[in-house]
Amino acid sequence: MTATMPAPVTLRGAAVRLEPLTPAHVPDLFAAGGGDEEVWRWLAPAPRSEAELASLARGLIGDDRHVPFAVVLEETGRAVGWTAYIDTPGFDRSVEIGWTWYGRAVWRTAVNTECKVLLIDHALDRLGFNRVQLKTDCLNTRSQAAIRRIGGICEGTLRRHRRRPDGTWRDTVYFGILDEEWPAHRARLTARPAVLSPAVPAPAAP
Image (spheres, rainbow, N blue to C red):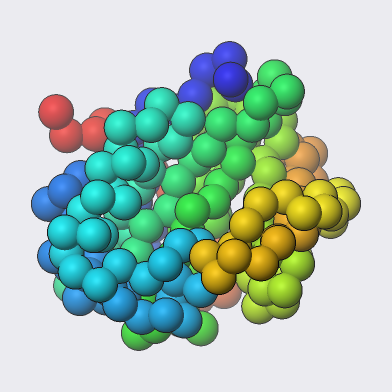
């Protein structure tokens, strides 16, 4: 396990805030993406009820290899997805960002970019990690394009990594962003009006 996983914290941006995921977020999350096959296509079978989604959330919350966040729109105060820091065994100062999904209503908006800026800033600039890892299905070209857009460099493909929800074998494409690479990418991404920098971390609520 990574020597020190990030502690739960609330990260605030212009469009979203990331706050520690709790069962209280589940009703909003189910309204945003519950039962939507396309939202869950690359992650897991789509949860068909709040109870199924709550079970997935509890699994993440209770797993010390994950630090999950609810993605909350600042404008509405409602959760529209989740994302997580994930342990990267074998890397001393790396952390992964993954287990990310958003409801369709916020696809192709500033939400994903701002979430990544918040998380990468916090990991590299405040916590002292020197590499952020991201990975996705080799067939998920939309996700690969999004990772490249934020600055991810393809580091290789792990073949037959795991089973997809439909039972077929998934090849997983790995990407990395190093600490010395990030400032130029942050400047490019935060030059867009919808994304502000720097992010301001606030202590997690007790």
